[in-house]
Image 1 (spheres, rainbow, N blue to C red):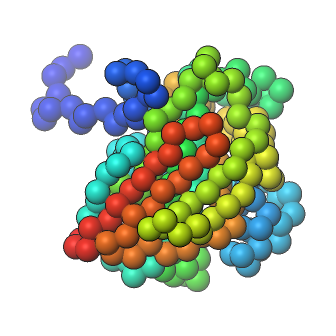
Image 2: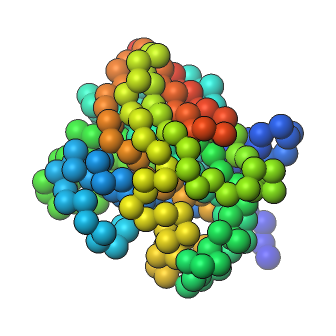
Amino acid sequence: MGQFILPAPKTPSVAIYNSAARFAVRRIFCVGRNYAEHAREMGHDADREPPFFFSKPADAVIGDGATLPFPMQTENLHHEAELVVAIGVGGVEIPAKSALDHIWGYATGNDLTRRDMQAAAKDMRRPWDMAKGFDHSAPCGALHPVADIGHLMRGRITAHVDGELRQTGDIADMIWPVADVIGHLSHLVTLAAGDLIYTGTPAGVGQIKRGQSCTVAITGLSSVTTTFSRQQ
Ligand code: MN
């Protein structure tokens, strides 16, 4: 194999709780509308239509405590508090009954969204990529290994902006539990070690303004705080 003409890009990665090691990120997948109350607040029925997915670039991931430039081209940046699943063992067409065996760990995440751009994309039947997959759009807290904490089946999930409670729910209320999410997604693409899955957000999504700070927390996991500067 020849040498790369330019230096190879850095491998994006996520911190691991209580460890100096890091989890290398391969791809970032996100589930749309996985909590009934959030589906309703976005103007949709909360029926059990099959889950749908979108992606963010792997290098959109950013750890806890980051101070970021305010995202470009938006006046309506939204937080979405989400449970993040980290895949440790890949596979394709994974049955839901064995899907949990593919998980390496769990983290809190924030599926940052340029909501104004997403609304325009929906109106014009255009893709969501630029509304969802912008720079630093995937804050992710430290990963907690399944080997230490087991599988997370329930737990309070919250988002606070400048200390004010904005979102609250329980991960037990997902329309499609994590095992089903992995089952469906692995029938669309081959999953591999290093994949992150953002599993959807409960009701209460809302705006983060310039200069504000957003914290996502889930019982039993490290929280993730992201601060936005006043400038782009
Ligand atoms: Mn989301």
